[in-house]
Length: 301
Image (cartoon, rainbow, N blue to C red):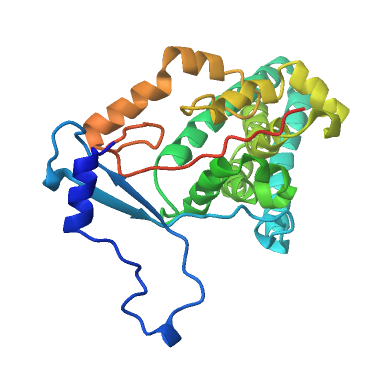
């Protein structure tokens, strides 16, 4: 905090006046765009004027309403989800037919299990990346990054998103990735892995939404799978919204303990910062230009 003498000095030297003083009264706007002004001083004991900085940030200030159009599914969203599901089903069918033809069920089944396990890890790596790097202008994934930041500000909104709205971006990626594999390969082991991995990634955002839901309102099968540890539960995911970001995996959450205890993402963040100078949003550096007010309200059962 600034000392009283410092505050008086600043107020005298740099008087603050309303920004509308120089605008004729009849031309003043009726409302102003909400902005947040943060003033920070790097040294509280010795005052250095050249170290002062004022950060002006324009932020979302109001949460979306439950009937907000941005939470609703569109025809385009549904078409992409349908296309993604179709490619996944085609891959799964090739795995089943190939397994029947070769009388070898074990290898495709094991490949499918590997796909399920690695999908949880993959969801965590992708979730970590969009939570910590880039912005809405980032090519291909900018809208997902913006949505991820909105989710951390208002976590409950994911429970209001319609299914296709929540999953269409992943479905689009699955369509373009899995379709060439379906056309190029007939190996049941390959498709055992691909179909399961793709299915879990396509639906991981729905698993994420269920982890924010109230148990009494969730389907019984979903609650049973959460209790068995096969789907991400609220208990596993709540740490992601408390304090420093962690527990990024959102399919089953099985990898979260391993990655958190090994500090895998912290090591990756340090390496990227040292090599490329990329600062992740998870760092709570008071001298960083990135600041966020996070509402960690959570919909508990």
